[in-house]
Structure formats: structure tokens, C-alpha cells
Length: 248
Length: 248
DNA sequence: CCGGCTTGTTCTTCACATCAGAACTGTAGC
DNA sequence: GCTACAGTTCTGATGTGAAGAACAAGCCGG
Image 1 (cartoon, chains in turn blue, cyan, orange, purple):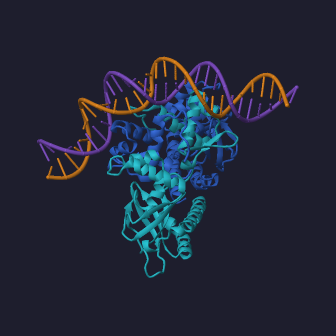
Image 2: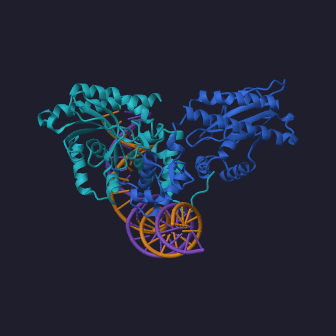
Image 3: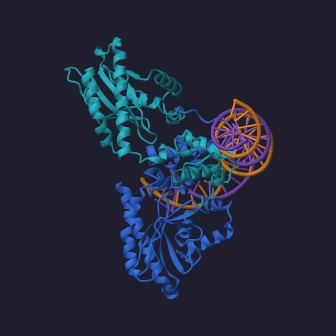
């Protein structure tokens, strides 16, 4: 049994104890939680709301609370091989349907890394970038993934950097609203890419997919079609990853 | 992206965000954590200390912090079948060596449940109690498991009950010191049991094993031998459970 | 080995965030 | 529809959490 820290934080202790209780004994009602922690119901409710906000808890339809995704599954990775294995068939389908090169992108800190690429078979095409990285705040997949993160975290990530944080946050808010991000030659002359986030559970690396094409083939009239294909593909990858998480 | 609770608790939010950061990007130094959360180093250190105390974080020899056991493994169960499967061969060995009936006990809230029993083959013996429950604060296995829990949690569990909490906490402190618990006919006339905790990671149900015998065969001169056998068996079960946790 | 710098840890103080109580809203059973 | 219980929202005061300062520990280069 560990010693309690000399400069403990009581509110934090309540929250962490409640998380463990949900794990061990959930489902719990607000009243149960209040009794177990010896706090008022209103306090228990506020603690539960915080745990739900950060995915350490979930509320069921019967109003009771259970452990959330963070506490329920193994983490942080599924090995990269599983991620690639799940995503590749879908990327292949995306490339076949659109005729352009598709990528799987993983964002760690401020870096977007190309985890997989499926090249199209046109003579002029964007090549395989697997293993390479781009600044996340410029790349289409990187920005799509950052848009799905807590703005406070993004701010903290870029605060000490040369990046204009307010402009980035506005960009990310716009990406969140429209559901995709476009990178028009900002990282590579002659290349335009469209990125879309892949929903992942908390604790997993931020993930996105993108379509990358020669700018000469970028046609605004086809944007809706490309976005649709990306969105459907991202959803299928996410569903398959959820399924493999349950099995593994 | 969820809406932040209207009555959020900032300190709790910091702690939960830090836990997620450790999971996604650990190892982290105190200074890293302070920067990412935009708090003072002293605050980051206090948050990390709380996370370590409740097993959401661990500090490595190089002073950096990583996600702790709660965030690192799947939970809350390993199905009961795995627990039984691991424990049964060891219970069989214990029963063979001692000549008495052995039990696997799981404690949930204030209830000790018999998860498995291996009967001895003497004519007079304690029978199979699998599936039955006893009040945890009376049973030998129940008390051994409660003794391994945070006293504040035990207090909260029994505060509203008829149980004399202070007496119970003194009993549990004594059990912690001596390493075993004896139940001499308190739950069943003519039955004496000795219980010993099985170390489990946070988030797992509290688990214990016990030897139960007819009181007429309870011989104080053999207590040391029985306790030794229990302790060794508990350690072997714990080791096998750790091994199966790593594989699965 | 020593000194300087960085980083982790401990302590103090104060103001504001957390808590509990009250009020309001929602739910379930009769 | 009514009542009792439970979940959720709101308010105000006080004591807890945060930051700054000081101290301790660790690391690296001369």
C-alpha cells in the first residue's frame, strides 16, 4: 500500500478513486458514488461528468455509470502492423474508386507520419511516402487529426513554437465544421491533398487518411465526391479497428 | 468532441488530461507535463504524484513518468473462467498438501463470494461452497482481501452499516501485519478457516484463498505450516495470473 | 572531483475553485 | 396525475489547489 503524497490534491484523489470504483464495481448510480466517496451527490455528479468528458466513464441509458473506454481496453497501441493491416484493404478500395494515391497518416505530437500508402496507377501520380513525416499543422491528414483533438491540447502543443496558434485553431475549427482538410501545395509544390480523420478511442494515436493528387488534376467540382469517398473509407476503417480492438 | 461540463473541476481535468498524455506520449518528465498542461512544475509534480499513488502512472529510474497499470492493461476481468482455470491446479495442490478443503474467494463490495472449491477427501470435511457468499468482514478470505485495500475505502464501504468500523479497521491492520486472517466459527458453527490475499493489479476484483476445516481438526501448533502453504499458493496463483494477463 | 546548470521535490501563502446545500428537473411506480 | 426518489443545476463561502520560492538531486563538462 503506497503512502499518500504529502501534497495531495483531494479533488483529484476523489476522481481517480471513483474511476477505479467504476472499473471494479460499476455500474454505479450518482447516489452510490456519493456514498462510496463520502461526498455530496452534487459533487459526485460533477466528478462523474469530468470522467465522462475525458472518457474514463460512460453513462448508460438506465442512468448508471460504468468505466469508459480509457479504462476498458488495452492501450496505447495495437501495434502499427495491426493498424496497417486493417487500413490497407480500405485504402486500396479508395484508390481504385478515385484513381488517386491514398495515405494512412498517424499524428504524434506535432508530426504527421505516413504509415501506409497505396499508389494509383496513373503515369503522373503522387508516390509512396510511407515512413516520411510532415508538420502536422500543414498536412491535410495532420490537420484533420488535430481538428479532432481538444483545442487546449493543440494550443499547448504549439504555444512555444513559431506557429500562429490562433490562426491554426481557427483553421481547425473550420475543418471540424466541414469534415475535411485540404493542403494545396503548402508542403510540396504540385501536390494537393485532402484529409479526413479516422475516429479512434482515447489513448490511441490520432489517425487520418488522405487522398493526394497532382495539383493539375485537382478539380473543385469533384471535391464533394472525393470527400464522400474519404468519409466512407474512414468510417469503415474505424469500424474495423473497433472490431479488432474487441477481439484483441 | 464532447462539451466540457458546465460545472467542471479544473484540477480533475488536469489530472485526467495528464493521464491520457502519459498513455499517448509517455515517457514524460515533470517539466514536459508542466508545459503540456500549462501549469507550474510544482503543480505538475503534485498531479503526477497523485496519479502514481492511484496506479495511473509510474516513475521510471530515469525520472520520467509513464502510464501506470490501470491504463496499461485490459480490465476489469479476465473472465471468471480464466481466474478459476489459473487457480484450480494450485488449490488442488494446496488441498493435497494440507489435507483440508481449499477455496478461491472474490470480494465485491462487502460480499465474499466462493469462486471455486477443492474438497479434501477426509470423511469429515468442509464441503463445496462454490457460488455461495459470506459477509466479507467476517469471512477469513474476505477479511484478508479487505486488509489489502485502502482503509478509507473500507471505511466508506461500512460507514452506513451495522459494522463497528473502527474495530474492523483494527482487525484488518492486524491481518496486514500477520499476513493471514482466521475465522473461527463466526460464520458457521464447527468450521474454522484461514485466509490469505492473492495480490492482484488495481482494477481487478479483490481475491483471496482460504483453507477451511472442521474446528475439531484446527490445531494451533499447525497454524504456521498452514499459513506457509497458503502464502506460497497465493504467490503462485498471483504469478500465473500476471503471466496470463501479459499474454491476453 | 567540483561547479554550474537543469530538473525534481518540498513548503508556504492566498485567492479563487471546489464543495455542499438548496432548488430545480427528470424518472418510475402507484 | 401525484409522490418519492434520484439526477442535475446553481450559488456563495471557505479551505484547498496553484504558483512561486527555496531546497535537494541529478547531470555534464572541465
